[in-house]
Image (tube, rainbow, N blue to C red; front, side):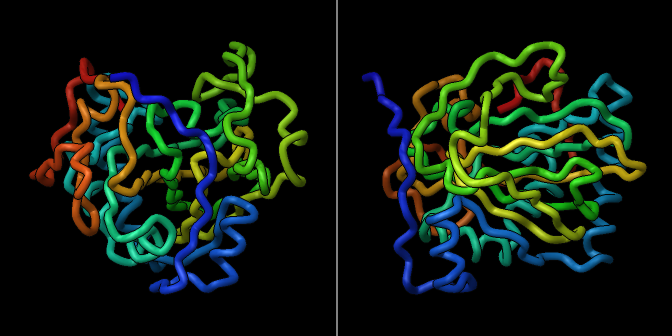
Length: 276
């Protein structure tokens, strides 16, 4: 059976939230994002950063690069534990409900003087998931500013369904491979997502966003954690590790996904494995 993607924004209607205020819910519905939210202290964030530095050092010895830690929560207990952080999950549940799954994580390590950028795009255009209810939590591991390549959001762009895009040109130096032209046509003026280390932003999978190169003297590291309610389905059996997911909260009543056990230890995946 062919599953058609349902590409539209589903407003949050939760009036019994754990952490988010009614104003924050209203803002998410209107603008497509919420930030900043503080999760970790400076010292806690420093420990997380040290963990990723150690992991990346080991990965580079066998040929990986700065953006390669993609989907490694299936292999690395440290990333899994961050995905399962109870404070983060309380905010997530306020937005997508009590039954929360995760199939995607990605470390975006934008080093000082890195000329690569992330061109304007919608996450939902990359993912064969339906309906479009997945949200991204972006955890800052460094202080993030416009100078070191902060994400930028186009408020309200998530109300337009899927926005036309084209394959990225080589000259863009895009970390990904899709580009939306004239982002200003799809919402209000772009907002810089400036965060302190240990804070998160949260955005809809239909929100138009991107980031410029980091031409500053400081690194800009961020971990993305992608969460979805259990009613989201996959339209491609090769995506999502053949429909395997982690149960972060609640149950899996629709059974669209097979629930997998937490990883043990810190195994670096073989380079043959395809990331999510």
